[in-house]
Image (cartoon, rainbow, N blue to C red):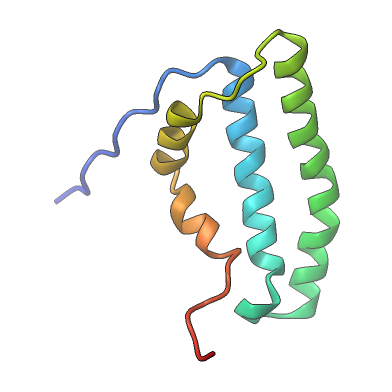
Length: 101
């Protein structure tokens, strides 16, 4: 049996799609760097090195939106797109895991 179809992505401008893609790339790299999640220093180092370029891509996507007159982020639409693209799980990798206080 096939897994259920994910909901469709909301309609996004090309610039909004680029913003979402670049944001998720940065989020994935930050999750790999997160010292509270363990892992190896080498993989964290590689992720940190890649983060520089991905952050520049995120900046460029926001610059493009601004230059095109897209002055507001439509948070409801962008949040739906992030949910469809597994953004909630990916964002959890950046936070502290549950544990003792």
